[in-house]
Image 1 (cartoon, helix red, strand yellow):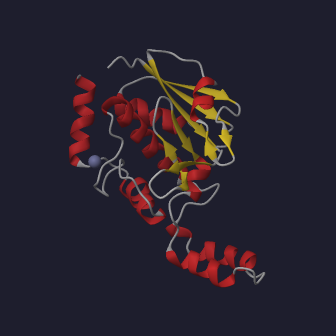
Image 2 (cartoon, helix red, strand yellow):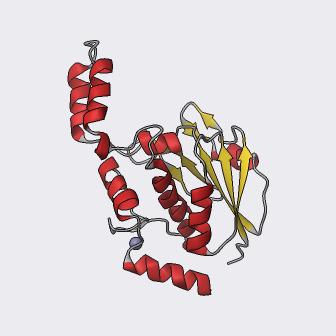
Image 3 (cartoon, protein in one colour):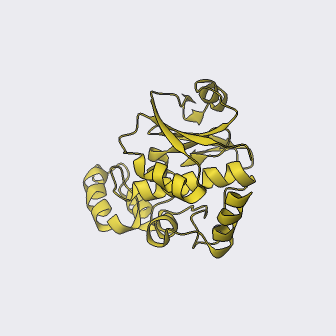
Amino acid sequence: MNCKKVYLYDDNCSLNLNPVKEFIERTFKIPVIIKRIKAVVVVKGLALDFIATKKSIKEDPDAYAIIITVRLFGTFDNIDRRMHLRSAFFSYPSVISLSGVVEAPAKPREYYLAKESLAGSGFWELEEAQLKQKLKGRFIDYEDKRLIEVVKGLAAQAMFFYLTGEPFCRAKKCRLYNAHWQEELIYSQVKNRKFCARHSKMVGKLLLA
Ligand SMILES: [Zn+2]
C-alpha cells in the first residue's frame, strides 16, 4: 500500500480535528495533515455530488484524503428508490458529515412516535426540546461532546476502506460497526471505542505490510 500520508480536510467544521489526527496516527502509524478548506463538499438538493466534490480537492497519488464537513448529504438507494441521509461516504476521498452523524442514524423510537403524534399540533417544537433532554444519553446532538469520538470511528472505517476495501464489521463491539441506530452508534464509538479482536489483529498486520 502506497499510502504515505493522510489529508484530513476540515470543511467548515466547528470541531477541533486534532484528536482525530492523533487517533489515525496512533492507530495506523501514518502521518496526518489537517487542511482547512471551505465548502468543498458539493450537494445537489440533498444528494452528494461526489464527482464535483472529488474535483475540488487536489489529487495526490501518495496520500489518502478524508473530508470532514458540516454539510448534510444523502445518497440515492437504487433498491428502495429513496434518498438516504449518510454520516459517511467511503471512496477516494471519503466524506464524513457531522450533521449526518446527528441526522442519519435513527433516534430512539420514542422520539419519532412523539413527533408523529404531535405533527401539525404546534406543540412539537416545545416537546422536542424536552424530549431531547430526556433522551440525551441515547442520541448524539449538534455540539455534542461525543461527536469527536464518533468521527474517530468513522475515520477508522474510511481508513479500513482505503487499506482493505471493507470499512465495516458485524460486531457491535467494534469501531467498524455500521450503526443504523443512534444507540448502537453510541455503544460502539463512545462506550466501547475499541476494535474487535479480529480488527485489532488486522490493524497490526496492516502496519507490517
Ligand atoms: Zn471488527
